[in-house]
Length: 101
Image (cartoon, rainbow, N blue to C red; front, side):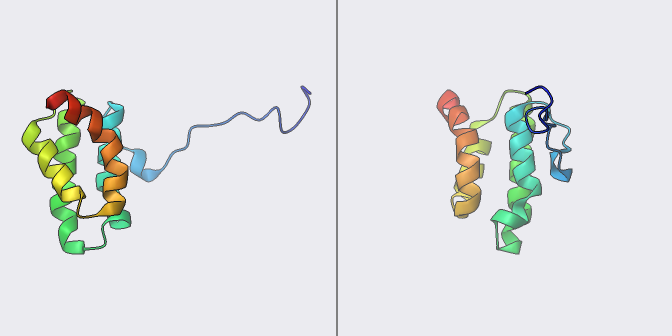
């Protein structure tokens, strides 16, 4: 089994261009990645830039481990208008909503 080409494989971390963020906190990285991939999740081009700004503001606050309630509320309310974005964002922010409430 040691000589098996399949069993001897070792995985490597997946790297994408969107993974290059300045954040270290996993939640901040996830939110910043969503901000960089908005064109995949938000079809209304006019809505993308305000969402991107809100998501990056939230990522900065998550990096400091101190998200502010108005930012959380704004991001959640905006994301709910875009089901694909909300589906990916809500699992990230739900624990923060619980802590902030």
